[in-house]
Image (cartoon, rainbow over all chains, first blue to last red; front, side, top):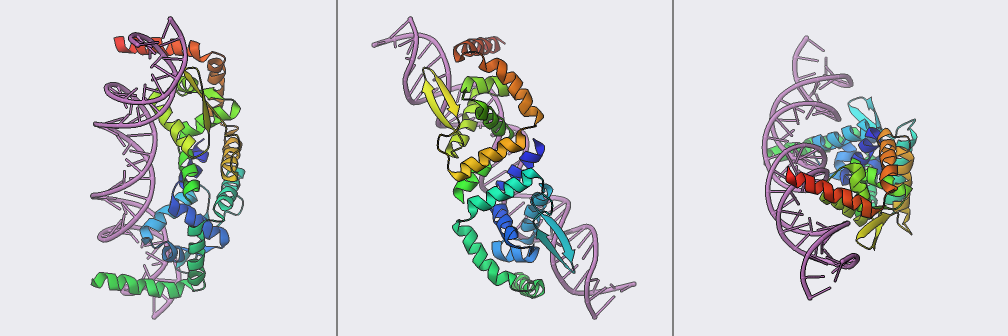
Length: 127
Length: 127
DNA sequence: TCTATATTTCGCCAAATAACGAATTAATAG
DNA sequence: CTATTAATTCGTTATTTGGCGAAATATAGA
């Protein structure tokens, strides 16, 4: 029951569903998710933590960047949940907009994205 | 997205998962759910309202009693979610205990259950 | 070795949600 | 028609959860 609840609670938030749909298409870096969803780094990090604890995503580190991807050997509960989410949201407008935005973002290196993000933080601190 | 979120949020609560598993097995009356879960009538009613709004259950009235049952023609999202929940919780201990308790409860008429519940409320008011 | 950096964790706050008792509603039974 | 009843809705309270900025952490790069 606990495992099931971890999964259902992880899925009970729009941002986390959007993140899952991004990750379903391809492995993505935290900074890329931040760009697409427009939330703070800390917020995205927290969402990712919940998804990972539920077994819905996995991560690896490369250089300074952490990439999140679909679990390699998901159990049946996780696999079923991921399939259900994909099927249910396949024609969703918000996901399509994210995909469009993500196409632009993910064609960039995390290095390049980081530059833009650093610059943006800088501008904000000057306000 | 809204429909998907309604479903995932409805599933993100233990009591509601337990209710769904009861209803999966057979149509049940509110008073029977109250007996098995041990919560207040108002609490169960609220849970049922959320499940119904998400399309996960349907209801009919017979005499003084309202029965809840699986949707007759569920859309793919609802059908997928119900299947996933059943599959995921089929070996769950809490569900087994509920089933055992429910076997005793559901062998009774709502009329009989109501008498016991009325008596119980009476005893509580005397305390 | 030290500095810069990407990300996570912490602390705080606002919003959302779960639980209950009381009040209300919609019927049924007598 | 009136009284009773099963269930729902409302109001209140406690708990959980989502969001952010600040602080902390781990590590790459100079």
